[in-house]
Length: 219
Image (cartoon, rainbow, N blue to C red; front, side, top):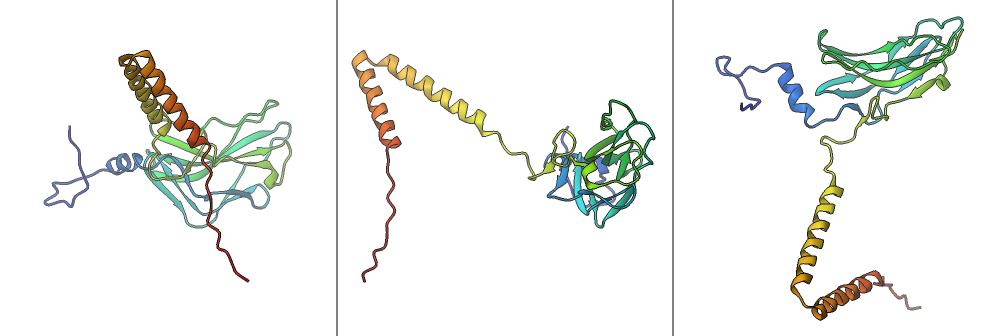
């Protein structure tokens, strides 16, 4: 099946869904935040501030144009917990928003697992460790996870870069096969002479000295 787009409609003959646009942009933008935006900082009491910034989730765009204040629930009296601050794509609600996903108080505290289903996808931009009895969140309690690719990640380019190592290995293997076949076609003396010439060239390349022209100033 061929798909194409996007074109102006004539008599409603070109109709597109949001999924069509998301599928298009998903090919060009990796999930994550853009640049250094959406940082999480302590505010006052049990509140934190999310700074302005942008994100991309599965081809859907999010932009926070001004600081956003979120408040964590009161701390447990006996156990610590870890809360996730997430940018959540919710296809059922048709929105992307920042929110706090509260962890479970425990003697062996762990952060909540990000929700990633067909309809909900979380980018974890920070984790807040809240000790028992805490009444005021400080910056030392906040772990920045924006650049952890397993939790969030950063959109550093519009397209994923091509992995050149594998291409280089293929070229190297092809050259070695060609050289081996060439040696098989030569007698022992010719093959040895060819190898010596290649070794000599490599040695000269390794010992090249580059000189920089220096302007002489006469006094």
